Amino acid sequence: MGKKKISAIIACYRDAQAVPIMYQRLTAVFQKIDVDFEIIFVNDASPDNAEEVLAELASRDKKVVVINHSRNFGSQNAFTSGMKLATGDAVVLLDGDLQDPPELIEEFYLKWREGYNVVYGVRVKREATLFLQVAYKLFYRLFRAASYIPMPLDAGDFSLLDRSVINAMNKLPENNRFLRGLRAWVGFKQVGVAYVRPERMFGRTTNSLWKNIAWARKGIFSFSYAPLEIISFISLFMAMFSFIAIIAQVILRIVKPKLVPSGFTTIISLILFLGSIQLLCFNIIGSYIEHIYDEVKRRPTFIVKSILNSPESSENKESK
Image 1 (cartoon, rainbow, N blue to C red):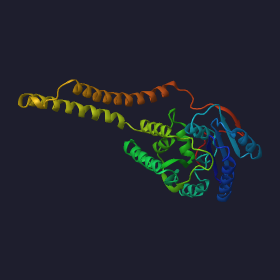
Image 2 (tube, one colour):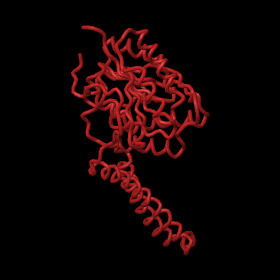
Image 3 (tube, rainbow, N blue to C red):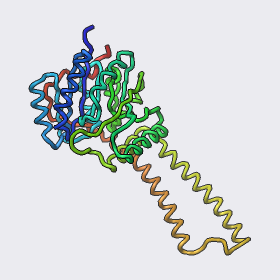
Image 4 (spheres, rainbow, N blue to C red):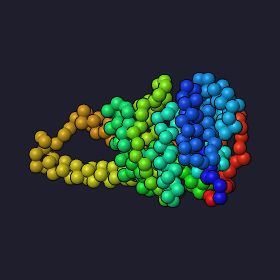
């Protein structure tokens, strides 16, 4: 049958310094496990000199494929871009900042050979502030509780995907791509591998609190109807509360009139409270409408400016 081939896809943004180290570590791992391989760097319009660094690397090694995007489309679309071009029997997704240790691929590979179609990294610990550690843990548990499909805990994009899984994910037409959710949605035989996620080796993280909130929001609204169910619960609760309050006020008006709330301040407080509930509901509904609007426009999820050492696309390649 010959050697199996693995495609490594690296999403690069502000990672020019890390690229040579990533290349060396990936090459060493693939040689150790004795597989054929290709390394696909997706330059998502990085503002540093990543394009020049990648071009020089591609000129030295034909196993290095470089995809340059016309602008920054985000990591999910960068991975999608590489997945559509990859030719391997399996694909490994890694962030370009070296927080996903390439050496773990050896363990991913062994699990894959055991028959697992998806092998994902489980972040049992991350080198970050206590606040971020707690926030990430809380998000994954909230996401799992709210999602309509089972979601693995503490699992990011770092994973090995069999060709059958890649083919299935490449056929999904949606633009709002949350890959770790889509990975769970397509099914197949999956398993997690625990690891400690180190800090970024070079530079500062490109994430921020607001970006992380937007990220969490995207995942929840893509794979959960719980926010809409919350609106129904709030509506029912407020209707019951209002009915009970009306009855209580009528009884108090008859029995003890002095205890009945009255005045301008009470009315304003009630209006502000009900108004805030309505705005929250509108915000939830608006988020779903936003997703629908993005989908119906049917714009491409990314635009490729150039490709170096382009392989023959293997979107329709069948799993061996």
